[in-house]
Length: 153
Image 1 (cartoon, rainbow, N blue to C red):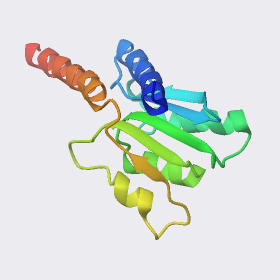
Image 2: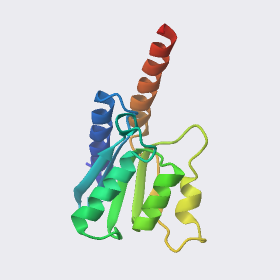
Image 3: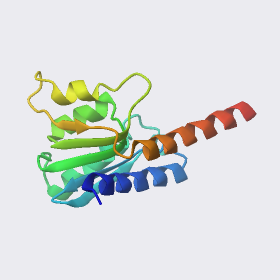
Image 4: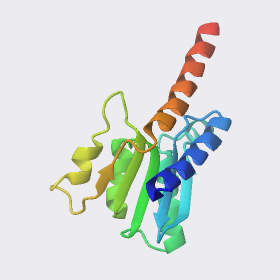
């Protein structure tokens, strides 16, 4: 199995964990030397904190695991194209590669522009569309259910 697919499936497992807790189903894993060393899923509803994104949890855990804020040899897999806040954290942590599943449909996240910007002291490689259908389906299903519940009220 392709490594990118393998690790995106791991990120999807985290997204499903968030979904089971009523969160927007986004999951992330950080891979170092071919192994998942950290993961996260959205927890904004539970924590009522704007920064409780899957990527932020994964980055924090990876930094603690490696005892360094520099994650130069790490790759991040996330089920949804990251927002500018999370991209900033990835760039600050010096993540090597970003792989994401679904593309952000509303208000584009500027992932490609931030990843390759020559205005920053670090760039990273970004590739989207990995297991895009599966990643999109879990998000679409969640929002469809939310809209239905909202109409019933």
